[in-house]
Length: 318
Image 1 (cartoon, helix red, strand yellow):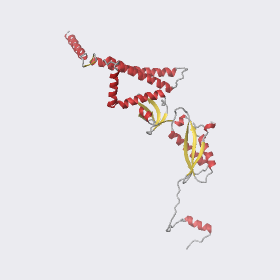
Image 2 (cartoon, rainbow, N blue to C red):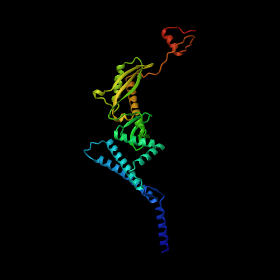
Image 3 (tube, helix red, strand yellow):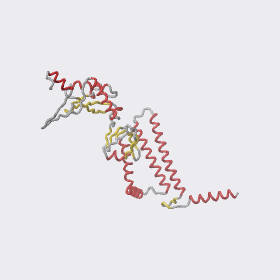
Image 4 (cartoon, helix red, strand yellow):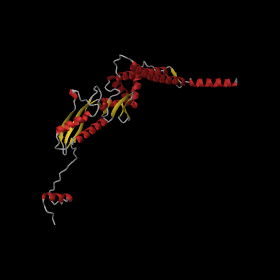
């Protein structure tokens, strides 16, 4: 009996301590239990929004007859998730005793938060919503940012966008960078892209033979657009270089080659070298002409000089 009495006393003491007001917001006493309830509401909103987003994506994936693509589904479910977060936060603040009808108070709190350094978070959040609504950037797009980041968009979050490079390196980019900076989207509305592959051959080579050899190289690389009349590959003579005739292969490629520019360039260079070698077309190396303005230069050709004199019938000097 004494143990039960002690237990009841301890529980009553803990209950009183948990219900002891710490401060007030309006007419609402804020204590430990109310703060615990606020944490539960926020956690439930986060859990329910994640579950709802995943469920909607699964329904869209299994649905038949829908006209919404994967990027549209992603944008729709992500906005629904944000909406559930906001509603849960407002419910939690209302439970805490904050009068949400006081717009001036909310606006002042937001202004103070932005003034104390939350402007970057707020800017990234709004930028993320703009990206999702405008669909100028979608999950799966291959982008090249002004900062030099290049890769595939794998996630558009509330504060950041995750870019995965071809080396499987994840780069976290603030959403505002996509709004304020230049972004090259290689796969925005087109599934094909034209690439340029420069190369050079030695002077004196037949340029028509070069073109034929390089076009054969294109046929050996899978993923090239060859048979469409408006997108046939071509070889351009672009420059008379110091040591070479400079050409450029212009070819349209499909999505798989488009999203791996480094590997694609290497494949074409490999195929071009094979075909030029098979056609006995010389690939040049830098050459320089040396002009002597004064003085004497002694040149010893060794055995080559002796053979040259023998061919020309010149007797060997004593």
